Amino acid sequence: MPIIVNLDIMLARRQMKSKELAEIIGITTANMSILKSGKAKAVRFSTLEAICKALDCQPADILEYVED
Amino acid sequence: MKKLAYFTSLILFYCVAFLLLFVMVFSILSYLEYKYGIQIPFVEIIENRAKVHVPLLGLRINVPFNYAVLIMWTAMSYYIIYFYAFKNFLKVFIEKKVFETKPLKRLRFFMILNLVPLIYIIVFTASFLLRGVSIRLEDDYFIVLAHLVIAFLIYLYLDVLKKGRHVQEENDLTI
Image (cartoon, rainbow over all chains, first blue to last red; front, side, top):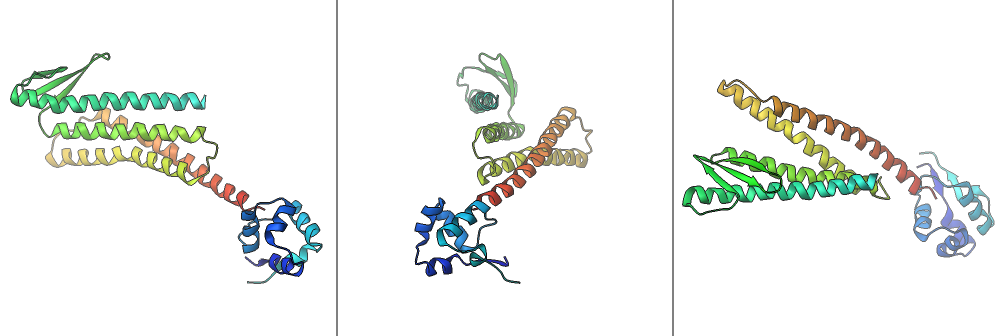
């Protein structure tokens, strides 16, 4: 998929663990793993909003378009 | 209503299984009476065939002592499996999650079971034609047709479930 999820990079920058972020935004660690691995088919605006709020970043910091 | 249908199919399966197993067991025992003269209850020997009396229902099932009995047992075994699959088919409706692999497998199995009589009718028609005997299988053709209609309806339902599973997967992968 040409949309890359750069959640790992943002988590490293904020020195936050993915489990911690999952707890803050209210999703399961399994879903967090799906999101990080790029297996997710879609991301809800509410989830994106919660991630951006928790990591103090913009959606573009997390999502990136790379042409195949 | 769905639960009622499922429990009805459950009772139907146990009744049919009991009835067919009863007939199968007593058709085997009837051969002992025919061959060795051992007295077996519910069995009546008439020349080269037997009659198995089913208590309560008052049914009298003819049991021939030749290869035809194998066909009879095969058909009985088939209908025991058929009603078991039918019970499982209706179980799909009372389950919380329909769009999963297990209910789909059950449906596919029930659909395949409904296609089995088609093979039977092809083999029998071919055997009659090869021997040059006139075919008188009106009832059998009707049963096969009924099974084919059921198989077609299940195929449509299966297709809907497959699409539903796809939507379910998409939904599960939406974070």
